[in-house]
Image (tube, helix red, strand yellow):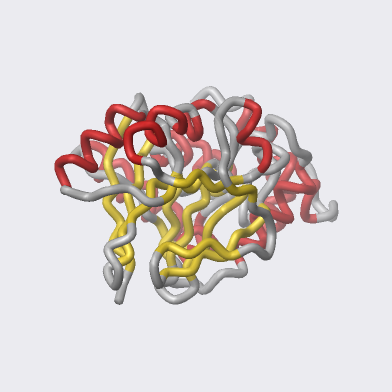
Length: 253
C-alpha cells in the first residue's frame, strides 16, 4: 500500500511533512520545523505519531523534537549532528534503513549544507525527503561542507529514478528561478520558470518536484553544462558547481 504525504506550510517558508504508511497506519513527521503547527495538523488529521525523521541539525528542522516527543512519545531518528540542539533516540547514516510500518526508507548521506545531513528515500513509492540538500531549481547553501561534498551528494540524488517525487523543505523556487535564468537561457528552464511564477501568484506550492525535472532545469545539477557561463570552462564538475553556488550566494535579482 502507498505512502501518504500530507504537506503544509509553516514558519516563514518551510514545509512540514506528515507521512503515513497506509498498510499499518504508522506515521512520521519529516523534521520538526514548528512543533505547534505539526501537533495541530496531527490533531486535525486524527493521526498519532510514531517517528520523527530528522535530516539535519538546524533549528528549523530539529528544533521541535523535544516538544513533539513529549506530546506524542515518538521515536526520534536522525544523523548524530542533531544532538547539537535536540534529543535523538536512534542515530542513522548511509546504508541504514528506517522502517515506518511496511514502508522502508533508505538513508542517504547528503552532506554539504551541514556535514552530517541525510536524506530518506522510499524505493517502493519513489519518494525522497531531501531536507536542505536539493531544492526545486536550487540547492542548500554550503554552511559546513565543501563544493565537492555537496556535488557528490547532489549526484547521489540525481541517480534516483527520474519519477522520484522530491520533497524539499522550503518554498524557495521563485527566487531560485530568477537566479537560474541569469545563468541559463534554455527553453526548458524558461518554460518552467514561467510556470513557477504563475503558481506562486496563485498561492500554490511548487513542492514536490521530480528528479527528472531537476536534472533538466536545475542549474546546480546542470553546473558542468553551464561552466562557461560562470568562468569555469574545462574545470572539474565540482568546481563548476562551486562557481554556480558562489554566484547564487551573491545574486541580488
